[in-house]
Amino acid sequence: MPVEFRADLHIHTCLSPCSELTMTPKRIVERAASLGINIMAVCDHNTVEHVELTSTIAKKKGIRVIAGIEINSSEEVHILGLFGELTDAFKMQAIVYEHLQPGENDEDAFGMQVLVNENEEVLGFNKRLLIGATDLSVNRIAELIHSFNGLAIASHIDREGFGIIGQLGFIPEGVKFDALEISYRTSREKAETLYGLYSHIPWITSSDAHRLEDIGRKTTGFLMGHSTFEELRLALRGAEGRKVIF
Amino acid sequence: MKLQEIIDSLSLKVENPSADLNREVKGAYVSDMLSDVMGNAKDGFLWITIQVHINTIAVASLKNLSGIILVNSRVPAEDTLKKAIEENIPIMTTPLPAFDLVGMLYSLGLRCR
Image 1 (cartoon, rainbow over the protein chains, first blue to last red):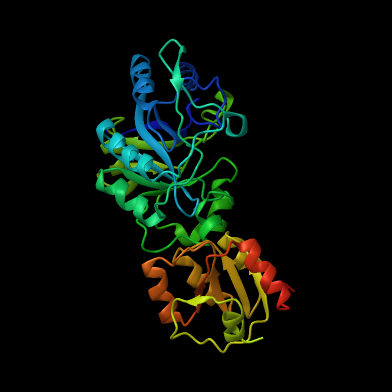
Image 2: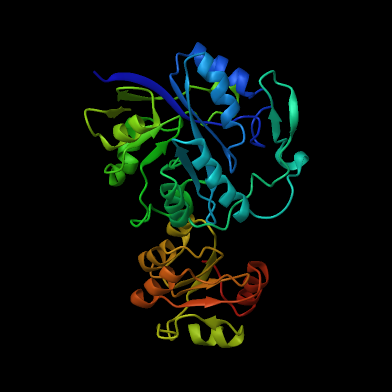
């Protein structure tokens, strides 16, 4: 029998320059556990380097971590890529790194990109310009995510900046999104008025947390057999009695 | 002012010469956010942008823009150019950055009102 899992599928860690430094995998997991979250996706800007550690810590608390990345397209549209296998997430990251705009992160301007360990000790800093855009188009990013068996989700479509509708006016027909993310800013009712045109694509909502207190401010329910990535895929498709509750 | 006069004055390259270049240009708008252009560009305006995505053509058609100028040596994506030909939306390109190009358009007398 499918049961309902609570998922927050868009959480940043201290590796994202715009995140608070307290967003260590350890504290994120503690916070998610205290809120009763069952599944979370770690989606840092243009990198997956904190996924594995978060996953290891989360396992001890019985929380499933999905490997994720928030990719910035050439049109400056944010797209979430979620993956079932860490190796696929790293393959995606390799392409993103290759196509990311050149330059080093300026910590004063954008913030620190801190890599930590399980005990919150600093291991180093990611030097890339993770806040930057890639030269990959929205269409190409969705294709690449799918080529690595991932799910492509348009981030915060209700945000003017970095949301697909704000940047591109509307969602291009040719791009196959597995879901659209409505941010915490917009209620389901309001989203139905604004984005009814896109109701054929599944909708989710998540926190897009950059601070500990924002984790779980919005979550999506998934009616599934287990808390696995493949079950998430089925739920988004509404297949085999699985479904999304938002 | 006719689009062709602007093309000649500023040495713009036309990416789809089959499009109607004798259109009357009534003004110009600069933005890289398509939603902003949809909200604020007016009928017959030229649009100056770095956006090369296919959605630009839909926006230009919707707003009945007289053409799109891509700055900073940007070139239209393949599907964008194809759609521009189908929809008869002139796409011009220039190595100039937006600031310089817009200054020249302003000197030619174009306004955003």
